[in-house]
Amino acid sequence: MNIGSASQLSGLPAKTIRYYEEIGLVAPGRRDNGYRDYSEPDIHKLRFLQRARGLGFSVHDCRILLSLYEDEHRASADVKALALARIADIEQKLRELHSLKETLQTLADNCHGDDRPECPILDGLSGEPV
Amino acid sequence: MNIGSASQLSGLPAKTIRYYEEIGLVAPGRRDNGYRDYSEPDIHKLRFLQRARGLGFSVHDCRILLSLYEDEHRASADVKALALARIADIEQKLRELHSLKETLQTLADNCHGDDRPECPILDGLSGEPV
DNA sequence: TTTTGCCTTGCCGCGACGGCAAGGTCAAGA
DNA sequence: TCTTGACCTTGCCGTCGCGGCAAGGCAAAA
Image (cartoon, rainbow over all chains, first blue to last red; front, side, top):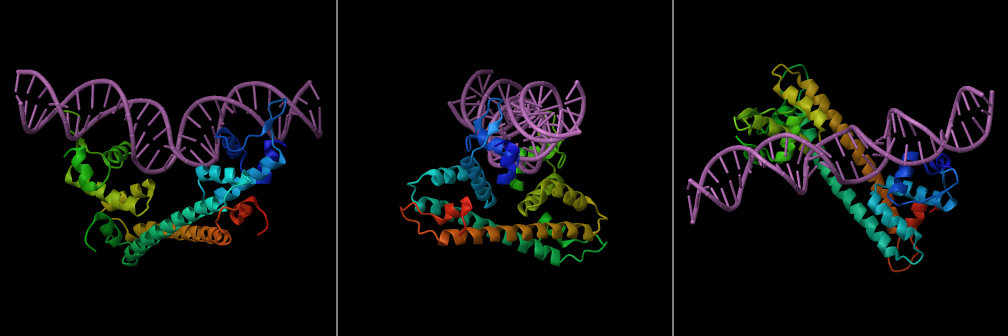
């Protein structure tokens, strides 16, 4: 199967698929004319990667997940640890963003937002005591 | 004032300060020996940038904010619009991350996480119906 | 035969810097 | 006075995960 079909079936751009090959994630066969030839297992791996990336796992994590996916004797604890670490990352990010939002919201709430130049947002950014 | 002191006062790495000069954000004077020479207003601008970046504004947005900051006749509405757009971005990101976390949490909850190979997380990523 | 469309490799670019190298400058101590 | 060490300069490459473009080869349709 050509890379175009693999792209459609996996939901990944062809460029991304080539990149995954370049970094050694999914190595398809080659036909005589040099075209990449994707097998069913290759497609499954690409779909797996597409979903894992969609859940925000880094390509590095995806590499580990993929090796676990292909290891019949993996321990599910190893997979769960990655998922929990990812959840912890997300929670950290959620806290940060929430805090940022609060700060911005407070600044914006105090700004009348008309054509006058007085602006508590800029005052806040400049470091003046609010 | 040398870049080292400017770095300490602004909380920005020297490399970042040089980068901001390179892209035309803060242009310090130069002394005879070629050293950058930061004035008080320069320091204020750097601190302003440090805070704005800390609130997650892109460098592009910071450029606009800085020009508004330096424009005595700005309309506060212009600043508020940027802040509200940034808040909307954050909210969007919060929704995405929250959804990701839910998905991951569900997968992780169903995974016993021991040394057996059965793993609902990998099954979920492989596209099997959960 | 020609066109059209897919495939190949390769290189540059992004954002916002970090790291390193090679060299110039300055202030302080021996 | 000399030297040391801290600071400064520019410049170039690397990051992460690709996107875009170019030049050229291959394949099926008109």
